[in-house]
View 1 (cartoon, one colour):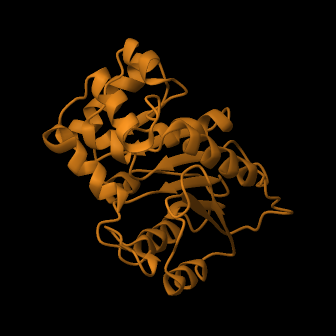
View 2: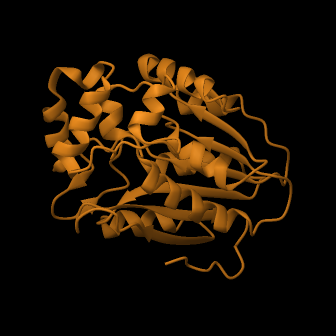
Amino acid sequence: MRYDRQLVLLGPKRNSVLELWEIHRYGIDSYGDPDYVSIYGLRPDDWYAKGIRILGRTAVECTRDDLAHEIGEDIANIARKVSGPEPLVIDLFAGSGNTLYWILHKLPGARGLGFELDAAVFDLTSRNFASLQLPVNVLNTDYRNGLGDVVAAPAHPVITFIAPPWGDALSRTSGLDLRRTTPPITDIVDMLIRKFSENPLLCAIQVYEAVDPASLVELTARFDWSAMRIYHLNEPGQNHGILLGTKGWVPSNPSRRR
């Protein structure tokens, strides 16, 4: 898998802060593009000049601008169809926070909250958001403990972005098994449905171009409505997307953008 090769490429820099030239080199070696790791709406030269810093593994794992923009747009397209106050947006595995940044960019007025358990990633993401003066609250905790302290008034819309580590859930033959991520996405969704049983809930789950069919059927059965979006930004077979699912409401005329 390309992901494994990229981690090997970074070698001992996986857990170290990258220099600008290393960010450029990673983009060139992996994708032929020195600006591949564009985040927060900025090219590497620009975000680095503002004091933004990332770890080597974050360069591999983060959702870059091109993809995060598409994800944010599709989430906002569905979220705008639910009535009520501006939604609460929660990123359960925030990482760099770039996807959360783009979702909030597409939903002005929404309140954002992120959870990141890894102390080193959390520290850098917090510093990055402060450098950009972004009013986003990211907590150094896991999603279970973080959600335990979240209070959403009844009928208040809640949007969750779910992108746990895939671990060995991605198979060359059957695709991404949504039951084998770490933790299983099925378990996460069950917890969210219980937690926000009195709220219109929209789950946005990051997926791969190929998804294990049985796991997809098992997961979508939990929702009142669902749809998948794949973004053709990389070479065939290397693309990501999102599975959108609602509970407690069904969007009217959920048009596709592409």
